[in-house]
Image (cartoon, rainbow, N blue to C red; front, side):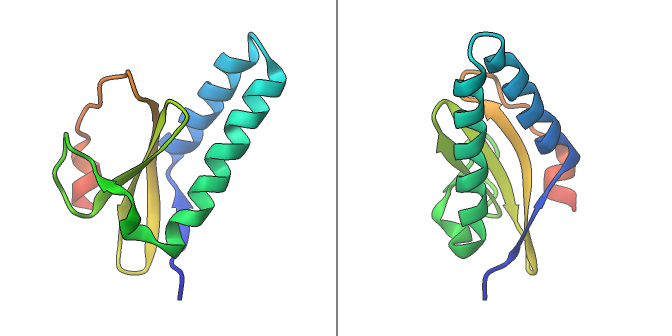
Length: 102
């Protein structure tokens, strides 16, 4: 049975910010990028451990998939997957203590 996918408020905000930024140059490209990110996110619950462990964190429950230049960072929990953040690959990842405590 696949787990449920939950988007954190931070991840939703990240995706909205990405869409707005890309749309300054091309609304169609922004739509394509967001669509691909959402499509990949929807597949995570089917194979939650297929993403690599986030190297900066080193926690087996915190994993990521890369879509274009963006990192979809998520936490595997017993009954669901929480998408924690969607960040550009060049952006420094700050370890968020809440990611490991919940």
